[in-house]
Image (cartoon, one colour):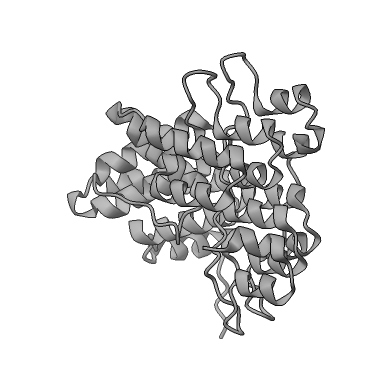
Amino acid sequence: MKIRLTPFLVVALACTGPAWTATPEEELGIGVRQVEEGDFQAAVTTLEGVTRRLATDKTKSKDLARAYVYTAMAYVGLSQEAAAKAKFLEAWRSDAALKLSPREFPPRVIQAFELAIREARNVPLDPGSVTLLLDAAKRGDVAGMRHLLQKAPALLNGKEPEFGASALHWATLRGNTFAVAFLVGAGADLAAKNNSGETAADVAQRSDKGDLLPFLQPPEPGPRASQDEVFEASKRGDIGRLRQILAADPEAVGRKDAEFGATPLHWAALKGYAATAAFLLGAGGDPAATNRSGETPLTVAQRGGKSTTAGLLAP
């Protein structure tokens, strides 16, 4: 004999079963994935809920800090800088010993986090270190800038007192394309003004460096990228598309392709696209990453006879 269930009974039976509720840790994992996939609005909704739940448990301070960091990243993706800064500060207050690893977070996120903490502590930038960064930008010394920013990411937008110029202003004025590409990849503030009220783009126009203007304009929103598009853009040397992809998915800079285990930086090195390699270095591309053959981007560039690109990738 078959028993026919009416819609009312179906609903009633469904309501009697135990409801599954994700733990805060599981919800945090969901929120992290949403950020990594570029679904920033959904990530904010998920992670705001996570932080409310974790905030009531004093034993979960590290999870709470991580949730705040990823919430801040989602707000960065939504171009809500004030909200991002507030969440970075909440992360720091939850875990005063918090450090963001460059293996997990892109340079621009680490820089924004450290700058927020520095401002909260009211600690000025070291003028000597700022000068070193500006001098490296003037020379077009990408390796020098990379080493300085690895030690102190907050230096990125530091300015000298005489002209109020940042490293990006100076690299632009001197026409150092690779330095400009690196600094833009690192997340340099394109809207920062010198004491004359000029942005780096204004400096480019004034000094007849129009070829640098594509770097110095904010990237236009682009179509959502597939998992492999970051490699295709690197193979083409398409910095404009790479800027769009990494703005939505900063983690893509460290992705490896399925066939060769190559990162975007490997492909730029192989093709000899020096400006693209400089941009990817700034965005957090790892020059020590190895492909399936055990080659780093440097060894790939050297094997292909791409000396200019190899020079940028040298330690």
